[in-house]
Image 1: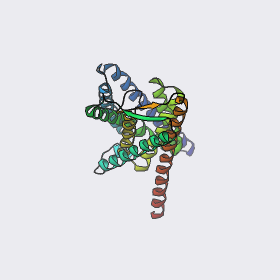
Image 2: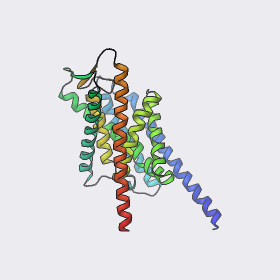
Image 3: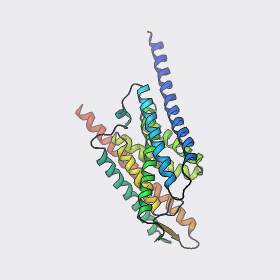
Image 4: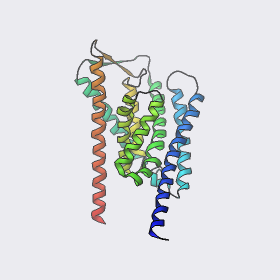
Length: 276
């Protein structure tokens, strides 16, 4: 085969694999769209438990299907649990909890915001929230930072793949009712952190723990648009300032954590290169 024909064949295979990635993402979105109306009509977070559990199974099933389609293994896309997965999940959860605490501390130190306990929310509600946001985090990490991110990384490099996945992740939140500004600064920036954690650790256990801890912590401080374990009380006339400090603190801690995982990833790569 001539070099030109060989290059054309490789280019065709590249674009075919790229098409599979977006077909996978569309498949996960369709599963979510089909399941959401079927969720039980109950108050609280029980509908999210149902949606997260079923959508996670759907995303994992699609991962198996697409990985086999390309002749790969699950561990190549970080979706194969091993004996260290539980420890990595716990580490990710601890990091996520620290980031929530740090963001809240910045917001509190800026003044004019305090949190009060919500008496209607009890221990059982916290457990339901834990299950709900854990299952939703599993679904989102499988749908975006498993097969799609790892395959796109081979086509566009680390940051090219990161930006594409972050944009699609934000787009899903826009379709779910968010504004573009909040989706890009919220979900998009968060996607960069979770994706970098997946790349640095070569698996999804740590980013799942990180993602789940952030969402649960944000819910507990009343940041999910619903009643949490606490609720923020903002002094009159300072709501805009509090909102600005809140999003700024979020972007700051997420970007710093992303850079930390990137530095870790680069250090491991350089160490491996020296050994080789």
